[in-house]
Length: 143
Image (tube, rainbow, N blue to C red; front, side, top):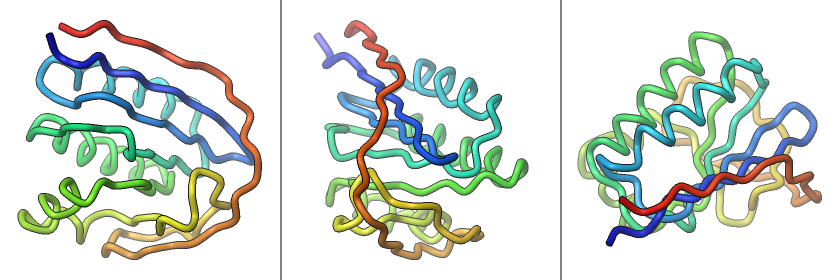
């Protein structure tokens, strides 16, 4: 049985943070896509996708991140990736996707303040660690 996908979302000062835990694969990426679609409907100024608890990602998971990045850019929402496991970052570098995303440094944590709008380029940004208000949590059963 696959590990279930767990998505938790918090919001603070116009920034929405989505924490992804479990595996992002063909069975779970539709859940992530649906969740991210709902977030974009609210037109946040910035979205941080925190991946430190993501144990696996396949091409479908990477494709979902790329699609979300493109949609966020079209509506002028800044997207940052945080807590990227080293193996996932190596994969993104290997296929050149690291140049299309902005990353928060490990020191920034989930509480980074709004970063200046950018167009990717693999920048690492830092921010403080204020508290977060947890607004919702979803648990999807393993498939």
